[in-house]
Amino acid sequence: MYGRCPAILRLNPFSKDQSREFLTRGFKECSVPISGEEVNEVIEILNGYPGWLTYYGNFRCIRGFDHQGVLERVYNEGKKVMLEELNRFLRNKKNKVKYIEILENLPARWSELGRKIKVPGKILRDMPKNLQDAMLIEKIGMTYIIPDPVLKKLVLEL
Image (cartoon, rainbow, N blue to C red; front, side, top):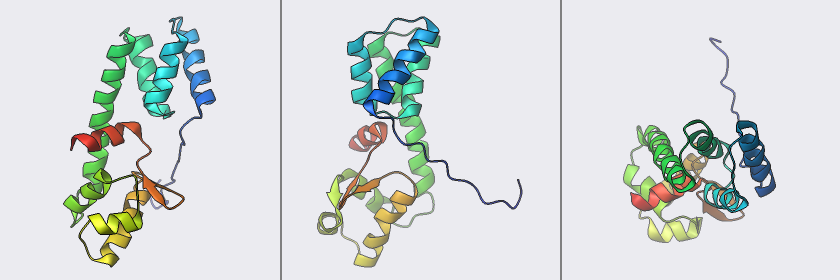
């Protein structure tokens, strides 16, 4: 594949109905019972992210862990993945601390970030765009958010 442009594959989170179907069907195929309450809690906590839902299913179906233990394991495994992604993103950045400050202050509008993050306007203008390009944050309307539930929780621990 030398010389070819890399393709970007964007897999959006599932809706609640899609998440429910994904989990229900997966557990049925594995012949592992799961309650409606557990499905609802998983959907609420993991926000429809296919990767995290897959981790959950793997830990429950293949490894045989209980529901609560699995939620903790999914977060711990996801935390490793997201830390690696965040570190890769920050590796060559001059304003590493300021990027973390942005993440810690989300959800927020650009103007709110401008009041809280003390960097020149041009630099601040580029920082959310860079985080968006790295798929770490999204802009919904005028507000920047961290959509990934694992990254959102991780940022609170930084």
